[in-house]
Image 1 (tube, helix red, strand yellow):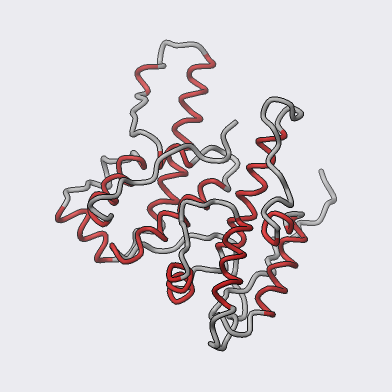
Image 2 (tube, rainbow, N blue to C red; image 1 turned 45 degrees about the horizontal axis):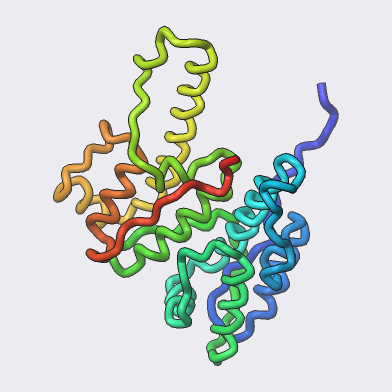
Length: 253
């Protein structure tokens, strides 16, 4: 039996609430990033931690770099979820498809330099999940970005389950297969369930749920594929001429 003490998870982050006096927010962000060994990924410059070459780097170095950058992005985005902050980033030309945390941090700096608003932060945030709730067409791009960041930060490859191609992997297909195939099915099922849980945690707005269930016929008891649900959401709330984001997550090898 281990005699080690259980240390509760401690988070030093506070939420940015304006673009005036941001010194306090910046200080606590640096404290959290330093504790995780990720400060250079966010505070930059963008080239501070260059991407390892896939061909010449030591095994798993590229995967470790992508996971570290994704985790740094998750920590940063968890402090930027307020609607007014997101609106200011968007008005400053924010590209939600740019997943470099140094880029987003610099954009926040550029945005704050032209603002005289006050109030920098709330007392604290309980953890560094960076999800925001989908409200409708007005925030679907930001919602999709923060969802992607959260999924990318997972050690398992959860982004593919949401942003990839909808697929079915029925249990019957592996019932008489090898042990390895059955284990692959089990892992796939768990990853899909975790991805769906993260996705659904952002869909609790009553108006969004009413649109999904009553107008589009989504059946939460039957439709368990997160990729299909994401594409349905984008079909309903996304810009007509814009396709939903696709691709694999940063956690994949």
